[in-house]
Length: 462
Image 1 (cartoon, rainbow, N blue to C red):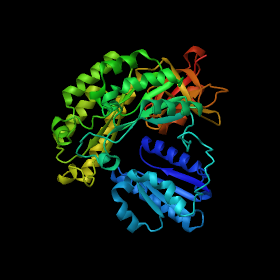
Image 2 (image 1 turned 90 degrees about the vertical axis):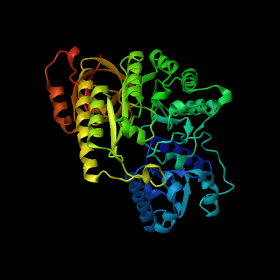
Image 3 (image 1 turned 60 degrees about the horizontal axis):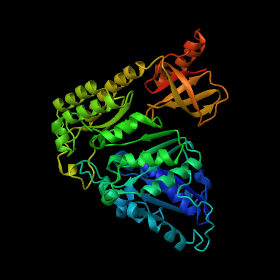
């Protein structure tokens, strides 16, 4: 029985999908990346915002179309959106054979066995580990260290979909990291709703995020370990000192602030205010040299005035985050914010989003341009038709742009190179910029130009 998976939403869903596919493989199924070859199609849904829900529904409809065309025997909807809207989905999408919410995934194997889609007695244990690679970059893997969330942000439905925060056992985390390393991981991205919350629910063990990092450093040799999504309140002196002294922990943090107006932050029920964010960012930069800090912001939250939004822009200009991911507010059923009047017109939300993104493009370009001429380590991601695409430590996979390397011969994905940063470019200008860099006369030691807004250009350091 061939199985394919469509993974939507965050990297935590990527981890879940790999576990689902591995559990099916241990029951005799065979993974295929081609949807038209699959007899079972899993759609791992996301329900974080309205756009994510629409994307999930579209994927379910497309999978159902493939089934109707004879390319699949069963379609399974699973994950976050199903957890919240299962009854509505059952009524709306009869072409989907099975819906399982996040809290019901232990029923996946029994339900498929009952439908005759898996052999109940066939347990070859072809994949004795807990993960089976299902796409993306094989040398860039994700490791979830906890599940759920205890934060009470007014806009967020994740606790309703994923439940309360639960930390995984440290031994299991380390064992899974070792498995990923054996599968070729060269970069390990730690993910959770809040990495810094690790261990707070395992009070008798006295463990925290620094213990996870030390265990991974001690028990694996993975060159890059990156932390994604850490609340600033969890950035303890011990954690920052560990980042400052351990070269395998890349100098990068994804630290959500969501807004820069104290009034909006209070309505959002966020734990920080401008002053605390400012102080913590300063402490991070003082302790960890040359760190890149990424954040996320919401525009158009209920009650956001013109003055609130201008305050957000001023705060971003002051703090100078390396990257900002921004999105417009949409009310989510069951959250506190959904009970507030959604009083910011959609057109104004989009206008504010555009202004924020334009400001941040300039900030990002300036911060990258300040690094021009430097020689840094880069991880090669793709080599195609003479084009070598990589990332430097300040670029997380799939969200922070890429680095294009010129004059790099005989390199393979997953390898590291020392590159000099030559030019900062937008994606739309990349082809012309690359041609200029390649053809520009320059001494070999000065073959680098500018690190880009969406990507970067560098020359292979010889």
